[in-house]
Image 1 (tube, rainbow, N blue to C red):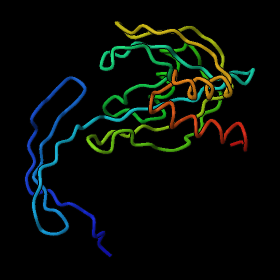
Image 2 (spheres, helix red, strand yellow):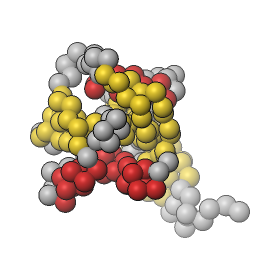
Image 3 (cartoon, helix red, strand yellow):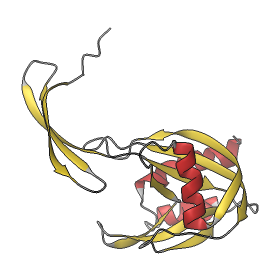
Image 4 (cartoon, rainbow, N blue to C red):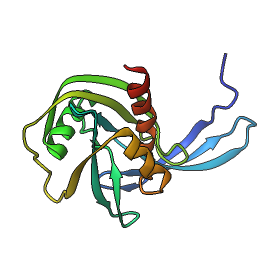
Length: 182
C-alpha cells in the first residue's frame, strides 16, 4: 500500500555546492495534487560515539562551534567520508579526537537530527574496552576531552549546559546501556 503522505519530486536543482553541504531546491507534488517548493541540505552523514571508560565515565568533548558561536559539550563525532563505512568512521574519529581505541564496538541505532531541512543521518555507536593511544586531531581542530559520568552529563542537560542534539539523542541510548545493559 502506498503511503498517503509521500511527496513526489517534480523538479530538482542544486542551488549551492559547498565543501561539506549541498543545498537543493525541489518542486514537489503534494498528496492532494498541488505543488510546493522544498529546500534542503544534502549531508554525507556522520557518526556519534558513546565511549565508555573502564571506570564507567564516558568521553565527552568541549568544542567551539562556529554557527552558534559558542563552545559545546558533546560526544565524539565526525563526518563519514565518501565510500567509508560508518563503523570505520567511528573508529577513526574516536582515535583522532580523543586518542582512544576500543576493543568492542556496537552499533546502537540511527538518528536524523534536522528532518525539516536536511537528509543528514547520524549513526550511534557504543565503544567499550578503551585504551589511550594518543590523539591525532585534524588540522584546524581544537577541543578538550573530558570524562563525565551519566549522572554528571544528565545534570549538565538539566542546567542547560549540554544542548547538542546528537549528544542529547545519544544520551537516551547511554541511559539504556547503563540501566539495562546492551
